[in-house]
Length: 147
Image (cartoon, rainbow, N blue to C red; front, side, top):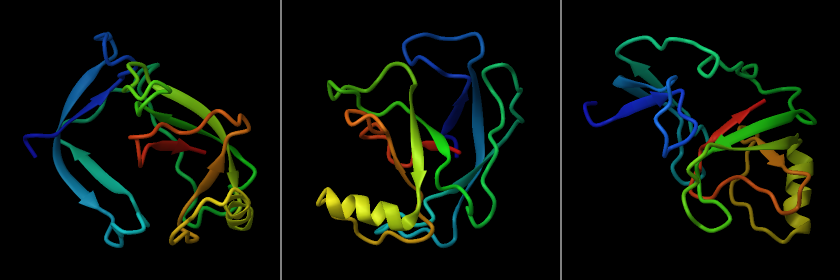
């Protein structure tokens, strides 16, 4: 895994920060049921060679329970460096608050907007911003959604 490095504590891609640390990857374990067509189980575990040092900018996030039950109605944070409104890669980490929707509400919302959804399953999490002009960043598929 010599060609992959994990950076923690990064906030602005144009500025080297004091909290920024680089970690070599020992192993990547891709979810055994990952489906490249539907992106179902789009999850991997990255094992680092050395442990991460936690700080004000580097910490743990709480994962949802195994069945992801009880999440709908919760407000989640989505983070990423995808494309901004000018179709350029954002230099600062972008953040948006989104409400997690139930599967039924998600399917109805997409049907009303005439947006086609292929293969939505109970393993997917559907979220919507209250701001009509806000969405997750393009080019950052699989970005971080933190309930």
